[in-house]
Amino acid sequence: MKRIAVYPGTFDPFTNGHIDIVERGLRIFDELIVAVAANPHKSQLFTVEERKEIIRDAIKDMRNVRVDSFDDLLVDYVRNQKANVVIRGLRAVSDFEYEFQMALMNRKICEEVETVFMMPNQAYSYLSSRIVKEIALLGGSVSGLVPPLAEKMLRERCQALGKGAK
Ligand code: ADP
Image (cartoon, rainbow, N blue to C red):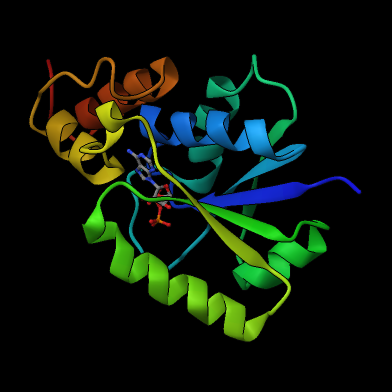
């Protein structure tokens, strides 16, 4: 049986830390689905389609990984994909409380879906989509923090908003 894992997240935008987790996940699982959460209650810089475009470009040279989006309950989405594992990244202790709550709640809703936590390379432990957006909106360089298409689209979006680098 194929071991299929879902890596869900907001990915607004996808960062090099997310890529690191995808690469680690591919060493363990046969197939990985990067699943963009379409949460209408959270305001994002990029649309779901734009976030998917960035991820698709970032993973174009990798095998056994694809991008998708979901707007239903995560465990339902996982089961519909014939997967039974959720991958989440753990950067620091500060991530733990929220992730612990989510994992246990998902287990309560669906016993057969397992959550696996992966630690990124320590070089990415300070990196988050939120901080990347803050840097870009204030005109700083995000080179080396995000994949190339994310960097380009961040620059364009900031310019369109009248913020960021000239
Ligand atoms: P969410 O809103 O679901 O937390 P994010 O896009 O912020 O979405 O993160 C998705 C997943 O990737 C989460 O498990 C998060 O802990 C993990 N993650 C975020 N940034 C990094 C990073 N720099 N290194 C490793 N994992 C990360």
